[in-house]
Image (cartoon, rainbow, N blue to C red; front, side, top):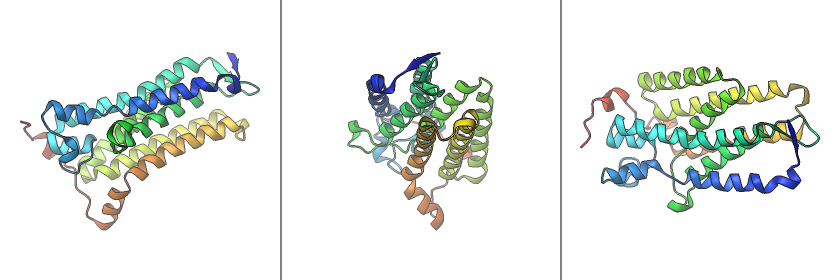
Length: 241
């Protein structure tokens, strides 16, 4: 392990954050929609994301969009972990990658929800946020990927049986973020007041809050009983043109 001074290396985190933001601005729903000669922003709910893709173009294209967004959220996390995994911050025992991957992950989600390329009107970030946490967990212990898969399967089953796509997605994101926060706390339980531990937990919390905030209209519709239902079984039968 090599000691790293943030004061002397801050520009690398700034560069990584900016690059991650612009990766987030890359909207697959809009691109896939154009291939199918549709502007997804003018179809269905108008949201350029997985749920609206599924409702508009069917389960096949919704799934393609989902996995593309998952990769978009996860790849910067892996890059951050790979680059900084052998460093710790000067004067601490805190591993730099534990901070970098969530910083880069947060910036991807910010780019997805507020893309400068789309006048700051993007998607809601669920798939990318899930990808962020699913890719982050195996960085701790490789078999944690199975826990992430179990949570994702649970989300899918919840959506299938309740047809509450937004709520199922938000519960999945919350479950993944809480699990990761608990792992971070356990890893640094003897030094929880360390500034980098606190900042990292704040980043995880910010990612979760950001996706919930992006769904504020869905939450109000859910509370009013007016939210659109997402029937996976119905969309599975849909034939796309």
